[in-house]
Image (cartoon, rainbow, N blue to C red; front, side, top):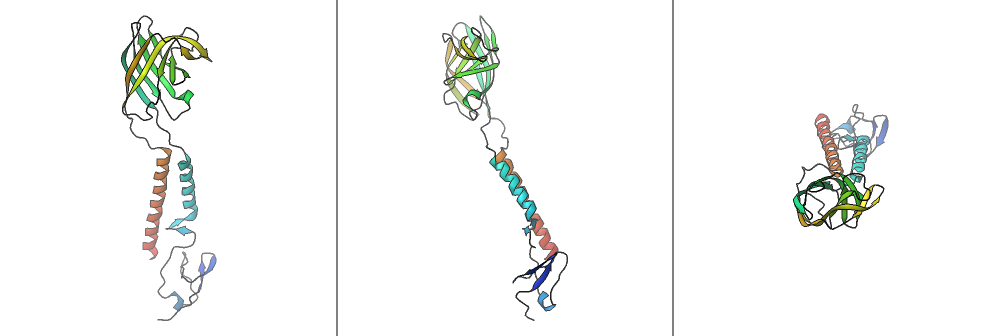
Length: 233
């Protein structure tokens, strides 16, 4: 077997590469002498990793990084208030949506609670907050407009269980700011109300989508690498 130059020069595309490892031109073999081409095994050309062009790989990593940067928030939870008696001959029932990942003033995302009795009311507007009391109302809040206040200390951030509400008040609003009631009379109430939630079907978060994208790109790179090895090996 004829020894070959340990540092041959090759025509690699439009460039000449001098290296201790023999590299094959992707467009065809170009060697300084037949002896130096003996027993050549093709290696991935420059600008490729695992058979994937670096430019494409960099783009995939950048896209995944953007998605990874997204913060995965807890999903809004829908809570159900069962039919519950309130002092004064009233009954309330309905649902509200709560999202612990939002700022305090926005956590009560929506409310749909019906009150029956002497003054039937539908609470479908979100109100203000007062400590750990979150308020709903039947319309733009003004003094003497009926409102509902639900106390929600340490309410779970995820669905799929029960939670005991210490107290729920329904009464006339006594203070409203910019159409949102933040205080009401408290002589009509229900205490220790057990509300329930149902776990929603899991939805991929931004972080999970990034993992899917990045895994797909890596799998594609591996497939290309194997294909190229079979083609030129």
